[in-house]
Length: 166
Image (cartoon, rainbow, N blue to C red; front, side, top):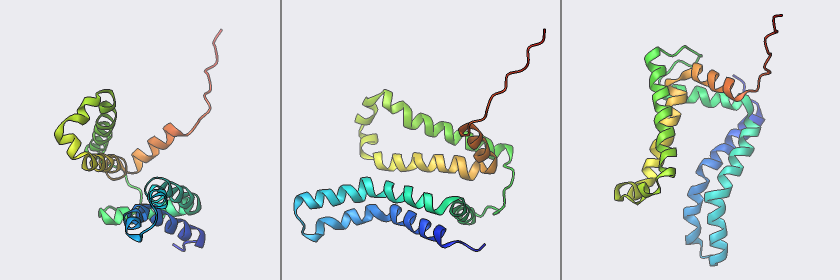
């Protein structure tokens, strides 16, 4: 596949957005004033990644998404073409998505869960784990079928009412 320069630039900007928080770790060692240090760390950790990911996604487009999909499939040893998921594979994907939903939403209704020592001490790892659970559920286990169904849910389609019979 011959990749366009626009997609390559977009993917490069996406990679920059992913590694941007690492730059936030370097800033305190530069000897800058507290205000500049706080501003740069905030940009590198909070604002920068979102901006870079948005711009990179716009530039990479569908071609960039296809490149990333192929690389991820290669990492997991899956065939590069679209293939139907088995029923057990699809069910595992659905279970991963439901578990992700409950793990991320339910604690919002029970804030005292975050006061538990285990959860408070391991919140970062739990967050990363739930994100991986969603990614595995949708992309790895659900496969092309899951992506198609999610796309159908998110895509607006006109609704035609059945004709009334007199």
